[in-house]
Image (cartoon, rainbow, N blue to C red; front, top):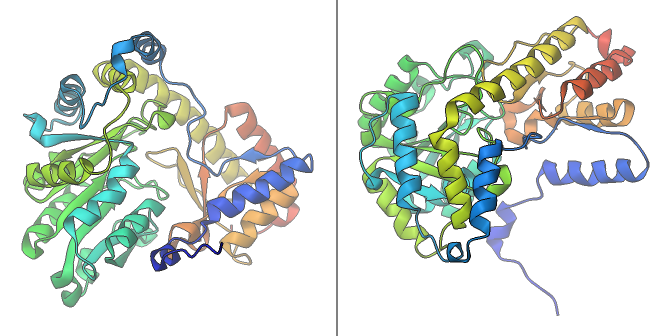
Length: 393
């Protein structure tokens, strides 16, 4: 029988990540040793106390029922965490909802807030899940360029008036993926003013909130008036190395949260209770582990950025996240550069154009290998005369 896919599936092409995975598999089968710096999946385990909590509850036969939108203990842990870490006063369970990893919520929320043809303002380059959510909603993206000259913050003044009038959502992500930029208080204040003026809901993706180095990132909800215009997603995937557990949450505007609860009541029945209990423990005991985790990533960042600059690259140390955003030599497209690195050095990074048109000319490098492997990667790069001698890097 011939299987015909829906027209909607035309909006979900095979991503470069899948193509890279196929090419990586081919190289591994050929016996090539690859140092994979392409995927932002933590290589470190969760803290021991999280694993202990998970193990204990998995043995309890009463923990296998539906959990719906989150246990009271998990919701309270989120509220306490935000009050403690970001000085954001969240007061009730009406201001928090559990999601199956922040990506699930980010993909589904546009269906709650937009109609087909409505415009969603989204950063370019930006996380690929945002486009998936826009496509599912049948909305139209308007891409806000992130330029180095503007500290990789979108310029709201450049958005045309006709776009402002049709826009229903603005999606932001600071610290960002793939661009590890930080937002300033002044920028978020402009966003709140802009959102109020044009009746635009703000969705802020704060998944890398704990992975910072010198300056602590600002929660969007910490800015006056932010809770009136938007919500913030956060996740335990990167902050606590719980990526496979698929648990996160959205906080902020009660009306938006209630609407997402309504949609999710038709989609899923919540996250496995032992995972929720492990996540609750993580949020309630975050400080020491988060400090240790930042030290590990900072050491990796310093090692690799210093090494790249010694090889002639011009790379600024990222202030947050697990990524380095680096320019490629002028003679190469992002994709050409990536494949040449795989073929000649056995190093895998992600081409910047995978995250949007403005990402062309860059690669994203994930610091998800230990220092020994990062040093080995630097050694391999040093052997590439065509790369080290190119002053345009």
